[in-house]
Image (cartoon, rainbow, N blue to C red; front, side, top):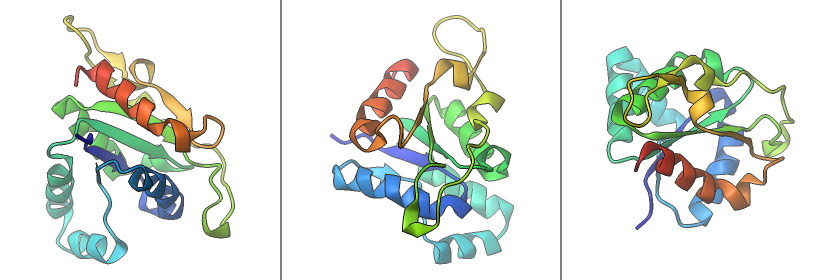
Amino acid sequence: MARKVFFSFQYEDVAKVMVVRNSWVFQGIESAGFIDKADFEEVQRKGEQSIKNWIDRQLDGTTVTVVLIGFDTARSFWVNYEIEQSIIRGNGLLGIYINQINALGMGTSFKGSNPLDLHKVSIGYNSLSYSASSTYKTYDWVNDDGYNNIGSWVEEAARIAGK
């Protein structure tokens, strides 16, 4: 059975995100967390609680959250909300830098800060908290051959989370 994964990203990076998503779909793996612009604008018009409700529904049944990191992702309120909700649900986390993807000929961008640095997780039987970035791995889509390796990265994040 395919693992259901939530993809967290800043909407401004959607062209680069689609490169990752299309490789994921091509490999036949079930995914959640994608919404087209018209749907997102409709949800957004209904207000903050509507967006939170949508995110919460998209996270239902997922075991891993993949955070796709562009130049400004770490400052996104919604990405940070998605990470926090993922931690509460016990999802494994995985960061992937997408700044080097040249999607639709739009060029690459500078590497942004890792939003996993901003969040704490508790793993195992102790009550100690660790930064999510020291517990879960972050990769570079281009340098680390994300197309061929994303499946194993997701499985490793799930294993760390005990999923």
